[in-house]
Length: 118
Image (tube, rainbow, N blue to C red; front, side, top):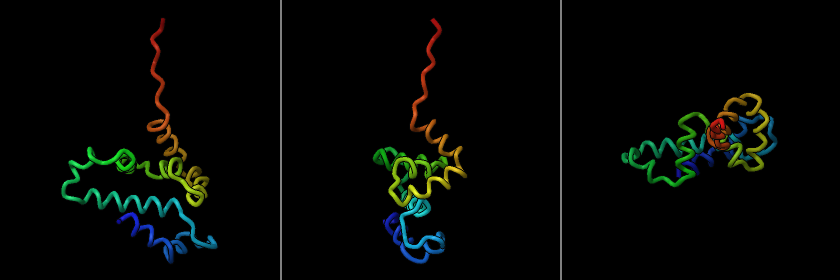
């Protein structure tokens, strides 16, 4: 519910304030990241949260972990983007190329094991 409420707030004035040059509403990276952060905050505020991470399904657990290490935006851009969010990629990449690389090298592309010399 927290995710849905956060997204609903972006349909009006909030979107126009954040994106004054956009002619009409579109789903944005800022909206999606804020919505997931609010959802994660509600989840973490629950009394039994300390035992919950083990019970969370894989994608939700991954979002919680990535948000905790500051890599929520890269996963949203690279794995969960729709046409609206994809429009935010060039600007994010220009400002945060290091975060994209960190996400790719740490979570997407497995490290190559070292081969013993023969």
